[in-house]
Length: 288
Ligand SMILES: [Zn+2]
Image (cartoon, rainbow, N blue to C red; front, side):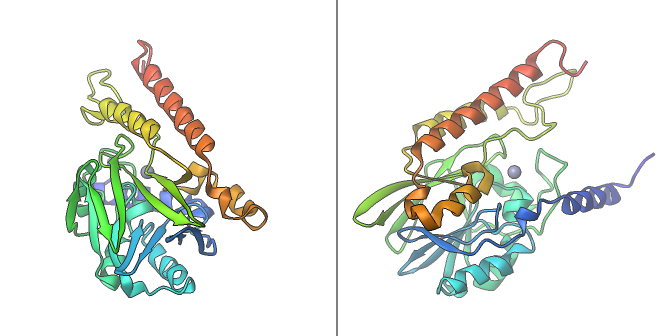
């Protein structure tokens, strides 16, 4: 049966929305992580607010329905939504970027996106090499970032590390926080898994998802392994065990976020998963 493309896309979107984990939309009360860094995401879709005297930086706008929840979190912490001056991104998949157009409409924040992800953002997902994911409202990109570019506002600087492969411009953000007389290196992992069904290598006459995908993953893991990390965060709560750590926050205090060992272990595990998937796709019997 031939299904018209628009219907097929709508069907995929509908299926995906119905099966969206509840943790994507369920509220997690906003809280301070360290220094001027706050958590304003849901129980799994992370969003971060960096507060400065010259306005605030929001990392991730999440689902199309998320901006109202993020705004509520920002205001509950005592900050103004209209002070959101810059919007940043972890990766150009709908669950991290679909709300971007709405956030920009409401706050007039400038959107800054890593080079490989710009196309996908401005086409609402239409140019993504992973064609199985829902599309989203396209958003205007004000500044294209490149690997190791910095974003500075009100005395705080974030560095954009291109850790591509999951998306072509997947971005891990680093910054330093100052709290209780100490300085902490923060890493917000952008994404590190292969997409189900996406080809890492050519096989059976079909090309890889994009030519440099394995080069990108290799670089991404080399970059992540080299980053100094005290406070381990990421685009999804599951990346850094958000819910379990959040449960311990009341008893342990904010030091619960300091987890260099957990970071190193998680990077190593995801690299091993990637190498295993690559070996599986390279085996002579793959797909036959
Ligand atoms: Zn993704």
